[in-house]
Length: 120
Image (cartoon, rainbow, N blue to C red; front, side, top):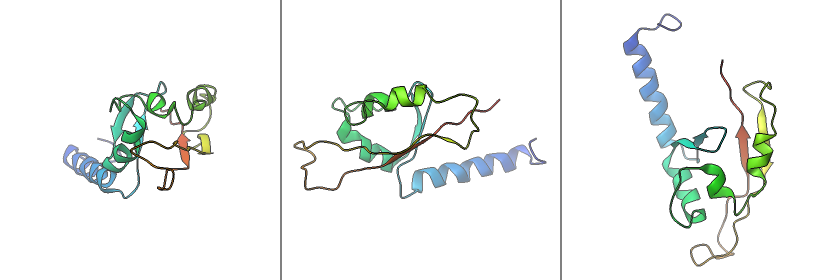
């Protein structure tokens, strides 16, 4: 038990958190230090899919490499010892180029914030 909660309460809280994640009106992604995507909600998948020519959303850095090529190195250079709530990069501008699927006149995502979390 954690914080006096029983297994059933923890399961209920986990389920509520997962519902929030998948119903959130913004894109949310949980990725590992090498970019491997562990959890992605539908909005994030919808925003990232046009950036992945083969439709593979397994690695966030691979998906964003064409529009944010320095992101992998920027996150890798972030010190491990920083607090879990700090940001590896903040307001990194992501500007997808024009393509048949996304003409320049359509809106595009332009900001990314990457928190670096680590637990003991």
